[in-house]
Amino acid sequence: HCGVIPPLAPVLSQPTDGAVFTEGDSISLSWNSVGDEVQYAGSVWGDIDNPPDIDWQSGTSKNMGILPAGNDYGWRVWAKNVVGESPFSAIRTFKVRLKAPTNLTAAAGACKAVSLSWTDNSNSEAYYNIYRDGIGIGTVSANVTSAADIAPEASTTYTYQVVAVKGSAASDKSNAVNATTGDCGPTPTPTPTSTPTPTITPTPTITPTPSN
Image 1 (cartoon, rainbow, N blue to C red):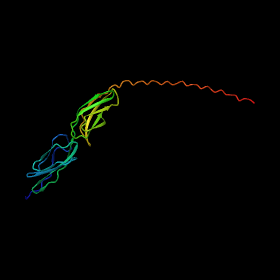
Image 2: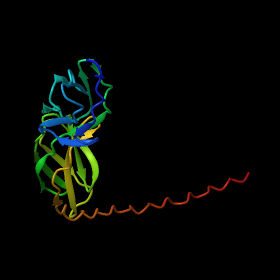
Image 3: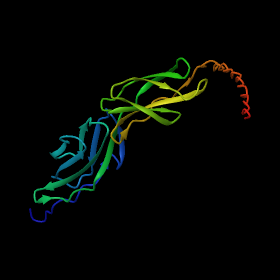
Image 4: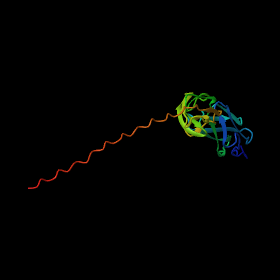
C-alpha cells in the first residue's frame, strides 16, 4: 500500500443543512465520493429510540426511509480505505414536521357557540392547538377531531385554524374557515323596583310638667 493515504472527509450533498421534511416522506442522505476502493459509514441522531446508523458501504447515498415526525435530526459520515479512516464530515441537520390537519369546518350554533371538526393526518401529535383570529384559544388531546368554542361576541365573524403539536414541533396550520356567530336576541329590560313611600312618624306630643 505504498503511497496510499487515508481518504479525505466526505462532503455532504443532500439534504441541505436545515432541510424540512413532512411526516411520511422517505428521506435519502447523500455525500461526495473521496476515491476508489473506499467505503463509507455514518450516524444519524435525534430525539428517538435507536436512531438508524449507516453501516459500511461502497455507495455514496443511503435511503433512511420514513423517520418519526416531530423531531430534529443530525447526521454525518466518514470514509475508510485499506490504510485508515478519514476524519468526520461536517454535521448537517434536518427536521421532520407533523402532517397538518385538513378539512377544517366551522358551524355556528346558538348565540355565540361554534362547533369545529377536522381530519387528523398525523400519527405523532401530542395535542392540537386551536386558533381564533390567529390567537390560540385552547387545546384538545391527540386523535381528537372536534372542538366547541364560545366566541366573545354574537353576530360576529371569526376565523379558525388548527395545528398539530408535539413538544416544540408543530405542523403547518390547517385551512382557515370562517364562522359568524348567531344573534343572542335582545337583552331583557329589567323591571324597575318601586320604592315604597315612607310612613311619616308623628312627632310625639310633649307632656307638660305639672306645677306644684
